[in-house]
Image (cartoon, rainbow, N blue to C red; front, side, top):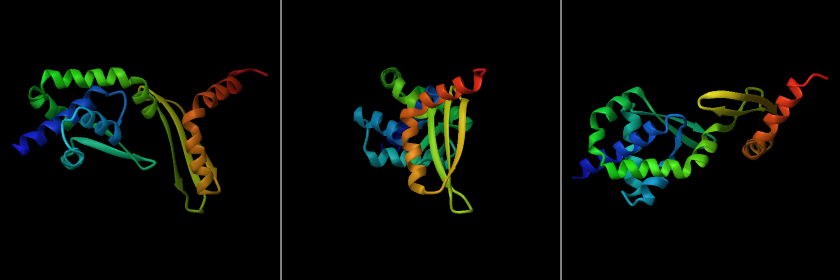
Length: 175
């Protein structure tokens, strides 16, 4: 019975990732939905995600200590074969969750900021805005300290739209 339950949790995760193909989903977003619905425990969610990664049904990327998941072609094929094991009620709850959370999901996946230490001891900060998998702006800035890199990343989420608009206005306006 436990194996059947784990299979259902994996299918729910695959279904979520398949239906949100414009974006990635974070561990927190997946966990919030499943826990709020009372489907299972945190341990089972993490076990399911780990097994999906191991089987290469989902891919993971880490951005500033946050894991982002995306379904792979192999995961799409598995879902196609087993999707009928997910009840219509659960599918509808997932679709409703995406409708309710669309703005938050979109904002989290479209505004990106991260930093890496360079060979010379400085930090390169990358800030980007994406829309439906297309990059609108991608800026890389070298800064001397980790604190400054972290501050820029933190401020990007709230100021990215203004910075983008400033760039467009300054670069596309003839003087």
